[in-house]
Length: 79
Image 1 (tube, rainbow, N blue to C red):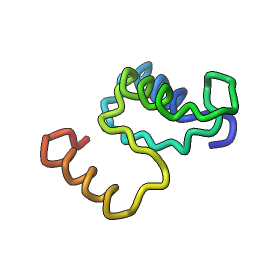
Image 2 (cartoon, rainbow, N blue to C red):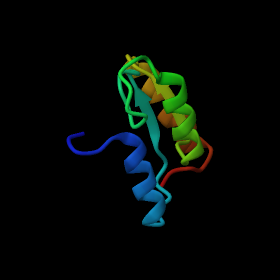
Image 3 (cartoon, rainbow, N blue to C red):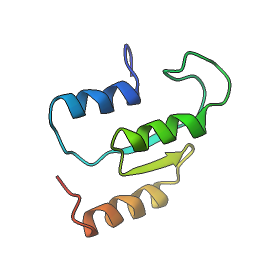
Image 4 (cartoon, rainbow, N blue to C red):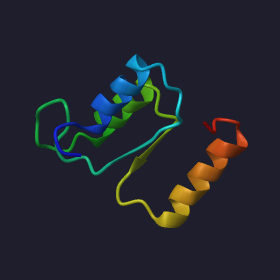
């Protein structure tokens, strides 16, 4: 996402008062912590703290993503 990242997007959703369910995915290279080493764990923990309903490590198989979306919908998180 040019000019932003997923964590900034989550913060923007919170500021706007939107409750859209978010699945955060990261490959772990670089993030808002300003370092280039693997930071997948901290990034995903921050995403959870900021309201992501699921956090996944890339690469994500389409079948896994579909399963996660279905699980969120079944729990009534759908927007």
